[in-house]
Length: 152
Image (tube, rainbow, N blue to C red; front, side):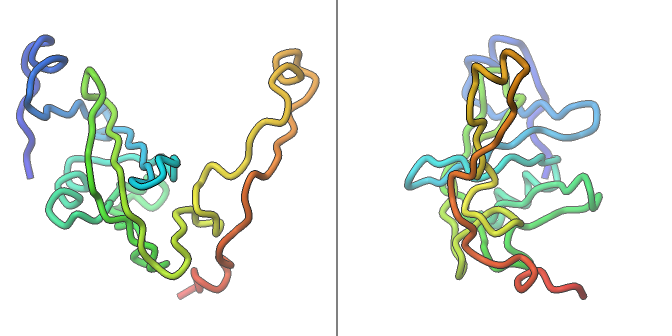
């Protein structure tokens, strides 16, 4: 799938045509959010091929930088992300997809959590002072990754 060429700043920022800005590496950042709750589930990258696949199949498909290949979310875990809406930011260099997640665990994180954002910084003031960087877990895992992601 090819996307419209980027045109004028006015058309990119205020127009009604998707003109995604892929970086020099061919990637665009993508934030994934639960369509029902608004919870941020994960962050990943897409390239033109994975964005096209996502639009055609309605299954969130990303570009795995570590594996250097397309990655259809849920292909191993069964926790598929069904795309309900796709947004772009003002200059079209970031995507936001809202998904409905299916699968036994209903989880997006490879560590077994619903969201990849399962820890938060305990004390912002201590971190600002450089005296503390402790993380607190804000949720519990929903599945055991060792069981779901068996070595092949």
